[in-house]
Length: 202
Image 1 (cartoon, rainbow, N blue to C red):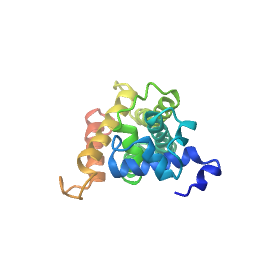
Image 2: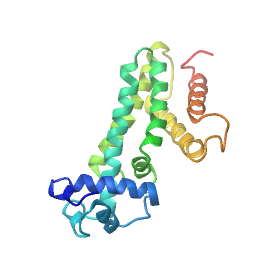
Image 3: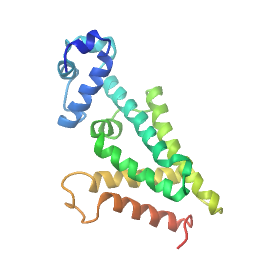
Image 4: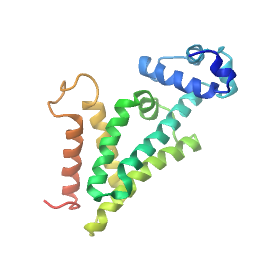
């Protein structure tokens, strides 16, 4: 990245983009703040104009990731159209697509070891993403009312299922762990879970 990025007032974002690339290449703990600065084309001291340290930079990467993640989930859900179940399952596919297409952000969000609770902006972005899943779960109750676990619990279960599919089946060579595609694995798992709750008919 050209050094002129800093002079145009884009240093903060240049560092974020450099960090995303470093995460993809070396993992969330495999680089230094100085390396991020070098890749962004600025001096080793320049990042401290915006970030107190490496963890704060990682938190900003994660925050931006959660914001985009929430945008994608909202677009996939599309207010539950044309049917809540269809929309809910679309969010699962959006989850897998984000993990594949925005790998550096995804790793910063879920695998960097940062504390979400310690950063209010990051926590808010994370809760926004979860909130879309909660609304999706709530929409499923409308057509089939009855005793159910809290919508937040269902959202967390589906989130955990989605994350597990990414970790176990969504990385590495396709078919290495299972002949079933990750998207099909997630959808079938979600349907089995929802059917078990009586949210969708047998």
